Image 1 (cartoon, helix red, strand yellow):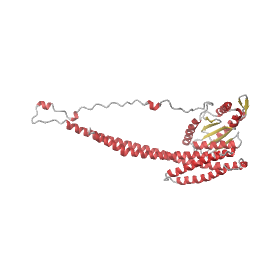
Image 2 (cartoon, one colour; image 1 turned 120 degrees about the vertical axis):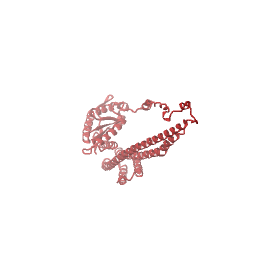
Image 3 (cartoon, one colour; image 1 turned 90 degrees about the horizontal axis):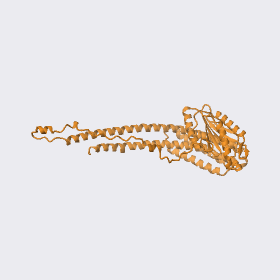
Image 4 (cartoon, helix red, strand yellow; image 1 turned 60 degrees about the vertical axis):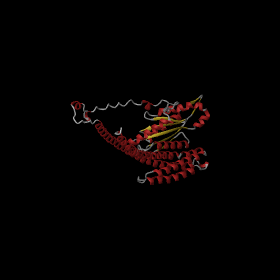
Length: 414
């Protein structure tokens, strides 16, 4: 029993004083970079969304848009503060980049505040022109956030690679410590065994005594083999209990993809486009005056209208596209390997098909039009737009189409 003490002591020292502290350091470094990556990603998304409340105010004039804008602006400024506190300024120009972005955001916020107080009589004329300038400023800020996100993504990959290499080093250290402890334990066990089996030598040993002498320690009986470990896989850990709620991948009414499926596919496609340097585009399709149609015909009759628009979205979409229903009166089409010019042509075909064919709603027919916003890569900048940037630009484009009267396609290129 005493021979096992050095083995246990070496393992405890390797685990408690070396392995665990270094492992925690590795995890802290990786977690810090991951937190920065998530903060920059949220900043990019919030910047893209900041243009929506002024857009909606110029169209509808609602007082709630001021509250929405202030909430988004507060989140943006909080994220800027977190990034300035947590960023490793050993990277060249990163502090200067964040400071410049904060200065430009202060100007953009002032522009948004002015738009939210625009007089109602000139909202659709002078206000629309001011909104275009605000959109351009937000687009530039979003692109800066996208560039910063790419930088932090590379840093995150480097941190993960370094963490993996250090884990391998730690594992080798523990293996070496375990081997040394095992060798030391075996030596102690051998010495103790030799001492316990030493014969008692008489003054004149007889033949019987000679025959009764014990065998040499090297001839000792080998210990029984250790039992084999149970290698059966823990299937219950992989399969789960079966009680988890699974999110629907397909919209039950239209049989198009769901919003969650679109978000996952959008993240996959933009990452693929960045690696392969291929273009990708996104179109958001909104039914014009959907709330008024619901009041006129009743929500229980709008299923036919939604199904009709969904059929046309499915018909115009190509086999490589990813059509989805994102809300009650809104659809989206993700178009891989398609630049913004091609995507705009496809969106125009969809708009024409929907607008030229009346829809039967109950016993009546209705003329339905859609507003479509298209965003994507322009020629020569393929694969440089992230998921949140693509979604934010498409949202801004569809807002412009709706503000211009609907039944039109607006695009926002890279």
